[in-house]
Image (tube, rainbow, N blue to C red):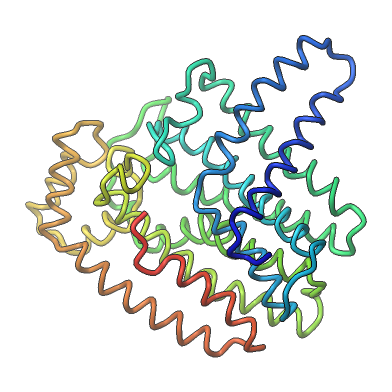
Length: 360
């Protein structure tokens, strides 16, 4: 089994799900009927929210362990790496369930957001996000409690969760609120330095660095040794660049990709997000064009969204992104070529290939 074997990866997911449902069954001091209600509910929630994406984050852990071991993995190593990979996917599910509520999103992966499902409700979905997060630690304890890197693995998830939540705060507070109401739009807050800080914390660590660091930790690389420190630092450096590129790409897709291809309806304009597109637009607009942004950005109005997208096209932001994408590809290729040991380069080539020219 290899990092590209999605069927084998999904089979490990089923084992994890079965164990977690059994944990509910074994909860003490609950009646059988209450337990059954919980089991019925989470037997729907887990498969609806966790699998279904591209699974790149999870598969990256397996690829990383393969690269570091420099050989085909044993069945035990594959299963361990896959379990760790699924915990990254569980973390993603926790974030997305919460993020969709915060953004008032409609669809996710081509289906209604979890909180939009009948019989779920927003209140339940908030609690479900927290339960999905807790399931990560149940699974890590079950499978890695005796592993030499158990504490390091736990700390990676704890640190990454905090980093992502800091990024989410920056993202959702692009426009300030007062007394529960959105303040007037302040375009001065949409700057590339704010955007880059948000992306580093909201996207780069959990979408790229975590998977690479988990592979290093599982393979026994100690960040306190000279060799280990260099490997973790190389991983962080390249992942920050890959993550920013990925998020900028995501912003462009949010505005321009058809929802049936993207798998969701983009809402960055309506939500007044500090996206790469609005930051670049503000560098290029005339005073007249700036007035169009002021009048329409952050409004839940289809005509206003259309006007903002027309402005983006007028400023040729899609073409500007295409130039940026080629520059980032070359920068990443050059950085990857300098990583030692050389076999570690293959992990980042794998990640770059997953996102270069992606359409969804």
